[in-house]
Length: 143
Image (tube, rainbow, N blue to C red; front, side, top):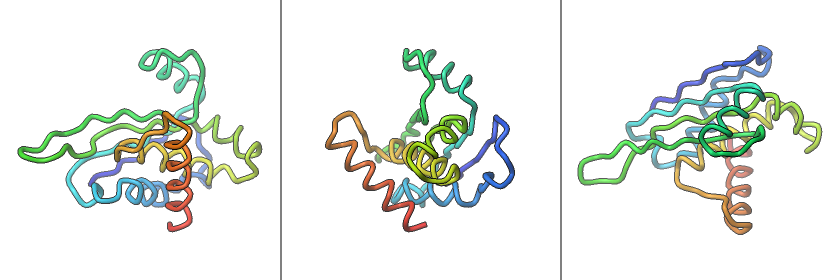
């Protein structure tokens, strides 16, 4: 599994923990992480995530994380993860103090959450959201 990390906004160097983010995404992808595939983790600012959210999801506001899954079909098997995870650094900064945790942990939370979407989890219902939040927390504690 190839996991690329891009910083498309000014993220201070002490928050550019590329190895940590890759470990979180890999752990969230679980069984898929040992297979072929490619995931891009892209840190953007509030303006960029708002633009992406509006253009592709028809939501006119900024958000914390957006994932796009582009399954790479395999002959005779299930698709492999291939996608983009956009994490908003500005929202991470804003929410870190709101939730009483550090900016880095907030960024990692969004990266893991986005990767769980690529692995097939959803958060459309309260039950699914709770399961996804639990799994995100478990992964972060593990890495």
